Each structure stands twice: as structure tokens, then as C-alpha cells.
Length: 127
Image (tube, rainbow, N blue to C red; front, top):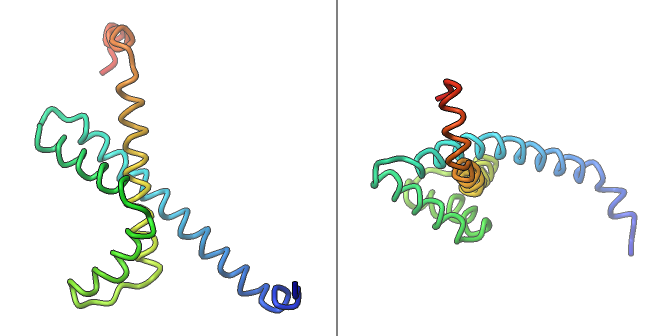
């Protein structure tokens, strides 16, 4: 193994690691917001809203993240005629993917509250 390749390209590797951290931080933040909204939509009393939420979660969780990135980066420009910045495509795809997984975490957490706990909270004046 030639360590000179790694040593010579170390600044580029650090720059790539920094971009990865930026994409991750932005995607987690946006995914949190998307997940919260989708989870609340999944618990809605309106059937169409619940159905749209369920379809979004099933489709996004059912396809690999790499396929989603490719669709946003390669297929979206074919449909719109506008070039997509690679950084924006990565953040968008990772946010959408993260949002689907986070929404299931929120939904399961909300639905795991026992009926007695809900009644106890309401008796204390909580909404």
C-alpha cells in the first residue's frame, strides 16, 4: 500500500469529510421537521392525509437512498430542464429519506402512550 497517495491528498480528504458533515447536519435538521409533519399527518383524522403520509413513508423507506439521490440528481433535471447542484441534491435526498424514518419514530412514540397515561394527562389539564 502506498501511503504517499493518502498523505498527498490529505487536504482533499479533509475537505470531503467537512462536506459530508455539512450534508449530514443539514439533512438531519430538515429530516426532523419533515418527519414531525409527516408523523402528525399520519395520525390525522382525515383519511386522505393519512393515506398520503403512509404512501410517502412506504415509498421512501422502500427504495434505497442511492436510488433516491440518483433520481433527484439525474431524473429531476430531465423533467425540469434545470441543472441541480450536487450539494442541494444530496441534502434534499437525504432529508427526504431521513424524514420518512423519523416520521415512523415519532408516530410509534406517540401511539405507544397508553390510554391511561393520556387520561391522566388530561385530568391534570394537559392537552
